Length: 243
Image (cartoon, rainbow, N blue to C red; front, side, top):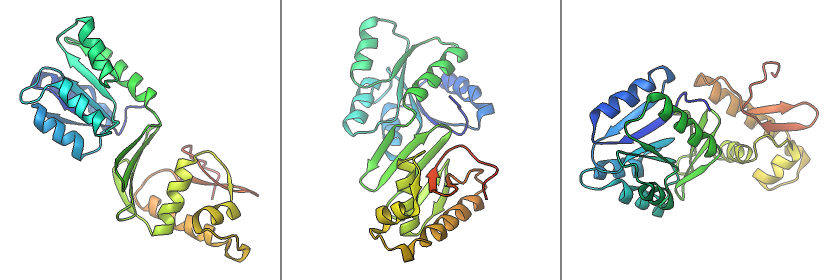
């Protein structure tokens, strides 16, 4: 599991732990946001997107158990690794029962924590988080997509791109059906709701515009790839031979 370009929220009252975690990710271009009490950590987790939450149990103002339970009740599906000085089996079981994805006992080595994080991110790889009815987050491999239906924008690894409504609908449809090949006629029917062959080239024009907008953000992937003689598919692997 690639740890590059991730966003991690650390809710922990020990700044030494923050410095350790921050140093772990210095070479990965990964941001670690630090909150030192339960209430501010919970608020941050509710208001912003993260690939992973590292959550201490013994916190001022709101403990880790309560934070984890509330996040799951609010249908926040961000993976959570609990951090604690307690090693009792009952505590570990409780954490897992209320929705934590893993449990790391302090003191831990950077190597152990890194391995746990990789394993949790691998398990949650294609998980979708619905922030609300108008915003969704998709995590695929090293790519993270946040789709906002309100303004038809898509954030790819924190690079914000504005799309026209049909461009947005086309991108989302193909993202959700990644690696499946669609003919132009199938895309026209699914996105435009018509089967008029005279309109078939509108697909090509929309995909050209989508690719151009992605390229303008220096993102080295077209995502929507041409399948010669057939149509298009959404793929995370860049094909250098494609026009």
